[in-house]
Amino acid sequence: MTARTSTENLLTDNPALYEARFPDPEQLAGRWAEDCLRRYGSGPRVLDLGCGTGRDAAHLHRAGRTVTGADLSEAMLAYARVQHAGPEYLHADLRRFTLPAREFDAVVCLDSALLYCHTNTELDGFLTSVRRSLAPGGLLVAEMRNGAFFLGRTELLDAPRVNGFTWQGVAYESTTTLSVDRTAQLLRRTRVWTADDGSEPVEQRSAWRLLFPQELRHVLAGHGFEVLALHDGPGPRTEPAWREGDAPGSATDADRMHLVARLN
Image (cartoon, rainbow, N blue to C red; front, side, top):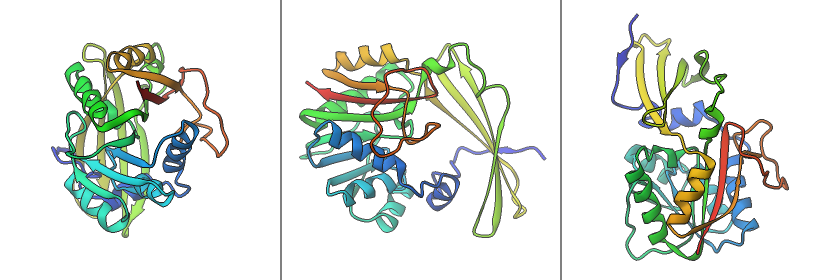
């Protein structure tokens, strides 16, 4: 059966399904972010950009921080307010945003959310907005895919990846294909969803900007940031995954890239 193409996002529009597909029972992402904030001496006021379902924002809130979560998806924000209460949740487009009368000690941007800035203009808009939101000396903490990994490597591109899980009695399967658009410097993703509830397959497309370590350093410096740490692992989505007490690495060779930068 041919999949129909949807402009909607099955996971974004169904946050509970998102958490079923990407469980984080050990709260590794939130714990890693909190470890970075402690390690580099952040103050308590945190903005979680691209907060999604609010899991990580809620963890930072439980750690004693004053947290604001921001996301473009109203469905995610509505879910976060109920399921991960504690932080304040606001609607914002990370590519350019203004949060009036708010100043933060740190901005956290996890799960490659920064890479939805596909163009240089959008990336500049993100960093301009972050700089405007941060107190002097504030931190930017980000976790994302590493563009350098795809230089000559094809193991994530050679074959589709199939994942299956069951949610509310329905078995779902996703088949994900990645390809590199070198001209646009994008990692494009095509994902086909099938379910055993009789619904027709759905094809969805998205993309991430491929940023390279030296390129990221240069762009950050142009916006007044000093890079304190830039490394491929360990992190919440690496193999092996980050564990409490792990120090930041020094290489930027693997699939993930982790950033801590300070606003000068």
